[in-house]
Image (tube, rainbow, N blue to C red; front, side):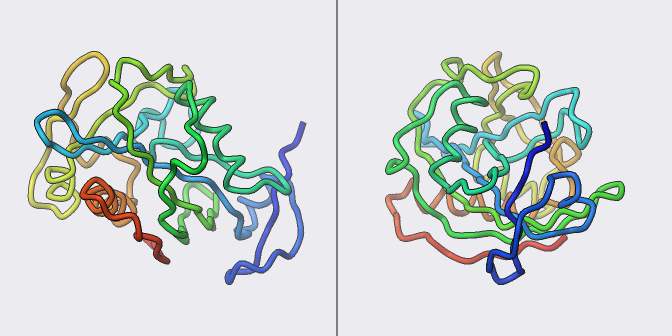
Length: 211
């Protein structure tokens, strides 16, 4: 069964519907749900959870990306994005527990795919241990908790790698392990995580990312 998406003008006006493959072929603007799960450890280190994409993925298998992300089907709203959390992480909090962080407009091209996304972006503060997430394999290969300060240094080019946490223990990750050309989007997520974990909740902003 073909997945049908709503499509939009660049400023967000709804202009119709189209099959998902055609949307990515033609570069139509479409909306997606993004949620970053963040936490502050007992040692007061702030971390952002990245999803390691499944090995079977056609695009960037085993690379690190947003904690939870997914397309809306026709007529769906951000609250429907909780479905992606249930599927990929094994749980979903109440929608009111998510911190809205505005929209990001994402423009990217990979091997003939033209991706024009309007990402409804949220953060969720979780105290859940990494071992308690029931990730949907093989869709999701693993979760990797990246420390905020070291992550910011990595994406700014001030370090070559960092030590992150996974459910099975520490691991070393470098820039090559992340979905390429997303450094600005990932930096924004780390900065937003720092704000929210420091008690700020008025972080709704319009962000634009173009590689």
